[in-house]
Length: 100
Image (cartoon, rainbow, N blue to C red; front, side, top):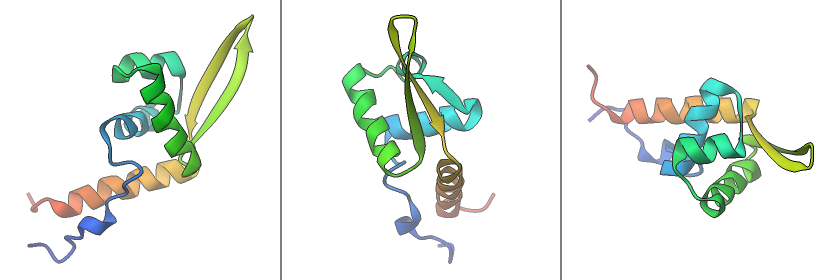
């Protein structure tokens, strides 16, 4: 077993299918609207909202609400803290795997 093997390093805020998907998508895109995330992640409105709220409370994403004409538009952007946490999450996962 690797001396770096430490399951406690896994960020439980990120470690979940929908939250991980949100973070991975935003790490590449930077920002996305709610509908785009919902489609990409095959999530329901309620499920996506709950997971976005958890990421927002952790400071990993910023949720911006506006209007496009008369229609509400919710945009989600990854924060600097979110990028740092996501990179640390990926490194923690790597540490759990045997060297290649």
